[in-house]
Amino acid sequence: MLYSLQTYLKYFAFLGIVPWSENSANSRFIQRVYSVFLIVFNIATFGLAIYFPQKRELFLSLMVNVIVFAAKIVCVTVIVLQMIFHYDDYYRFCMEIKCLRLGFQCELKMQVEGMNWKSYAKILGLGAGLLLTILPSVYVAVSNSLLYFWPSLLSILVIRMQSVLMLLYVDILGHHVNLLGKRLQDVLNCHLKGGNCILDGNCNQLCSLEFLLALKHNHMGLYYLFTHFNGLFGWSIVCIYVVMILDSTVNIYWTQQVLAEVYEYRYLYATFAVYIPSIIMIFIFCRGGEFCKRQNVIIGSYLRNLACHPAPAKEPAYNELLSEFIMQVEQNSLAINAEGFMNIDNSLLMSILAAKVTYMIVLMQFSSY
Picture 1 (cartoon, rainbow, N blue to C red):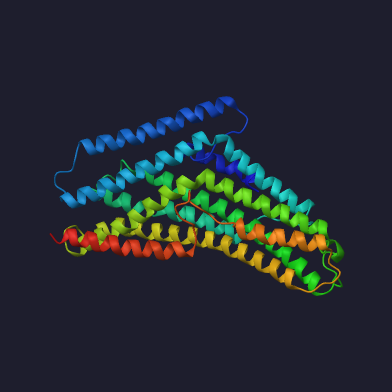
Picture 2: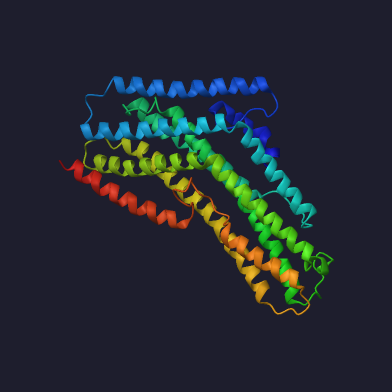
């Protein structure tokens, strides 16, 4: 699925976030040199912007801008470096998705289709929205002085497009977890009906030991896929979340400054153009992680229901394998994890909200002096 999209995704290589070619050594070398250039360009731009400070700005406003600007530069550096060092791992990740898809088709006898049009519409709509919401900031930067906007424009593009790509990857993972859950539900229905259903034309096959083993094997393949994704994009997720939390929190402070008539009301355009996309990205990504987490819980519930269902015809080996499968699902959770710092799910939303309120109170206290 991801391989078929690579024809379009490879153009994100101009931002340094996706490999251009899998087999060409020259393309790989050129892209790595280009990625290093992007990193040096961002750091140099940051240094020049800091070297010529804006003396007209309040000290607190200048300090907040520098912190956010520095966070974006670090985030982009981490994103690009991860792609440089994990160039081959990206295509290995694509190959694992392809192999898992074939396993679903051959071992689980499923007609695996791509994601529905709503998922693609969501990704395309989010990408277009994140690009369009840069325009209000451009308008404010042209008509007024928007501190550090032009030096950080490339960083903003890289961070936002990387967020869209990671959301695409999470949706693909969630799609496969959902398919596995549906297949387990089919197996459970066959057992509940005593092997008398005519599901897929062969209910006995779905109730067999070999089929349960295939389900267990594909679940482990999914777990390895999640682990690979977390290792491939873990630090990127951490940095992007830090930037989005900082951006959305600091823009609450800017709104308070505008309402206090420290800045013109025109600056609200730029404030909301950053605040709203940050909140939307945090929410959608957390919802994607929560979907994977809930599907894993549902898979576990199907297996426990299957274990509790009395079926005298079950072989002892079947029950033993089922117990192992249950332990595997409980211990190997299919979750999006950012390098052990946090799980991406709904619980993270409340943590972010609490942190934002705390930061807002601190910023408002500083602004009162």
